[in-house]
Length: 462
Image 1 (tube, rainbow, N blue to C red):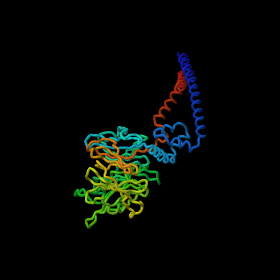
Image 2 (cartoon, rainbow, N blue to C red):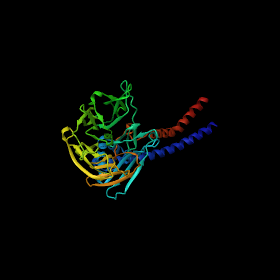
Image 3 (tube, rainbow, N blue to C red):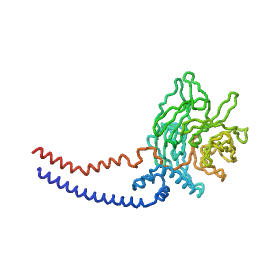
Image 4 (cartoon, rainbow, N blue to C red):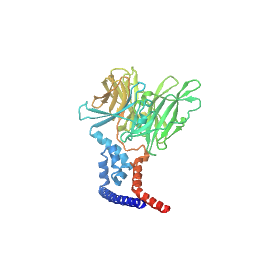
């Protein structure tokens, strides 16, 4: 019996050894071919290789990371990641291809938030607008989640304030839920309203989120007008901390309309606000927060009135990236046909440099301003409940999509990015990869170990 078992395991072991030797040969061939590929890739000038790879979408570049070591080193290089963001997105824009990211949620209980990606080409007729619904991961997709705003892009990263707060890189399908803030309120106070800001600190290579929260007295349920608490989140530390309230230029009120457009410029996020003077006057101001030195700044604004000063108007901040400064859009609150004025801060660091840049209109069927696209394209929700893109230079409109009468809509430009939110996955290899490698190793040496065990066990019995 022992002889038969010994013969059987010896035969099995020899067969496995032959199979293993064949696999070794195949593996050597693969490694040799990879080595040859590495050699060939090393002969390509890095500038040429970078130019070629920069023309691919971000998700395709993730696959290219495992082709060979030179490609991996190039694609994960911080300089390439930064240059890719500008090169690829400028390339898409130069080809008249446009992409728009829209978040919308019906004002109905139990209805989830929808994020859609719209794309079109200006070389084709207006009706050729394709759309795709982006499905969030299951942990973000339930009736208990709520978002009504979207901020970005900041190097291709977007931030959605709500429940929960989270960052995302849609081009890589990466999502990062922010932890809940455990910063305690001051004794005897609580918060009901908050305003968010999102940006990047190039000095520490860190993405940050700042929240301004109003103050209410628990004892009397009265709001402390003009006073706020501030909290800051850091992606690098994945934690919140409280900012010194003395650094906020108080008292100041923040207008809710300032949250409609993501205004991030010169490493600063901005909110449109005002100050109630003791003589009853209201003075418009802009509150800025610098993501690098983490300091607040109050920017004085001259009296900005709509061309027809007798009508009620809205004022909304704009990022004017071509001029590297901020602006203000002023338009009437009522009416079917509307004109609007654009003011700009000619020198961002000079409060006295505000000028009226231009006026546009009348534009038909404008109801609500929901986004700013590029340098001269405005996104509106029309009176017919359609999302409309208006080009102020060409003075034409394009219908993007239909929405419900009471839907909440925010729209931003979509941009590709290689920035990783999950720092542990730079290698491109998931934990499943290493598990499979472990199983392969165990399988290869199982019969050898079993034979040795059997041999020593037999010897022990004898």
